[in-house]
Length: 101
Image 1: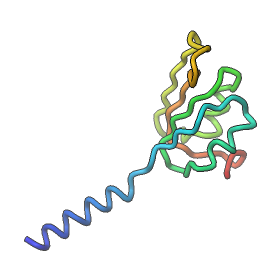
Image 2 (image 1 turned 90 degrees about the horizontal axis):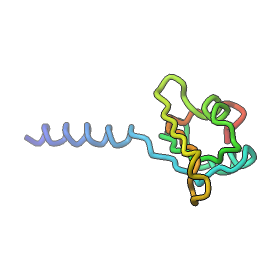
Image 3 (image 1 turned 90 degrees about the vertical axis):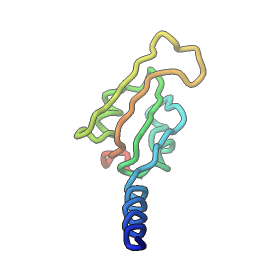
């Protein structure tokens, strides 16, 4: 019985250690802010990225996301005057050499 409990404990701890955190920086309003706002994100984290309409989503996806995994985008172009509204990208964070911290 003790061996079974130790085995279950090891499996649970291994799953918790391998799971990545969610990186949710504040809204990015220009390309100059990208490195500063993503400095706490680690490669492999889940990235929830809010950005202004002035920033090109294609550039963000190519330079910040792992293209082997699904990338979800949400456009909220109609609601521009609300606080923290804008465009959204959800992906696995894997920065290119241009944005490595």
